[in-house]
Length: 257
Image (tube, rainbow, N blue to C red):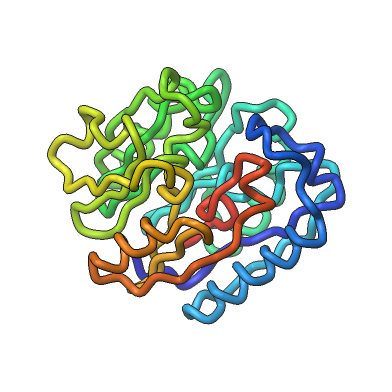
């Protein structure tokens, strides 16, 4: 997981109009912008070259760039987001990625895929079937990955409470080790993996990012931070309160490769 680049996009003035089921109240835009800048500074400090897209008020959820594209070491593919209001977000990601990936593929109708449902674990990808990613989209993505030498497993998360995307409750820590929340930790698809379960009550912290030897963990979940640290990682804590209000996590805020 030696990333060199990341695409980021700050929240627009319309951020509070985005889709959310959190029930945590509206986000404070000024605070969200501060938190986004701290996130970007952390990625920069870890050696990533940032591609900063301008905020786009037409798309309130567009700060969550991860959902619009999936980038691997062997190519990139644009998604077809499951929420119709987010369809236009893909255009800007395609324009940005075209510099590095001139032959961009894309998910096509009737398939839908959100990048948040795709968890890369080295040569294997876990693909969540969710309210946003359908079976047709998952099948297209699995075929695209297979053509590039990657394996994949489907995980139906539609019945799991509070699981908007697969990566809401699943992150790769390197090797065969995964960090998972709640019922997802006991999912059949993970049976042969080393699954570390997030402490009860800290499920939100299951969405973390490993960059080189560091793992970014959301602020306010000390048991998870200590657990990840005990596994030998350098833990960097990032405040995510305003993104949590909009159903977003750490991985959502960047496309990394």
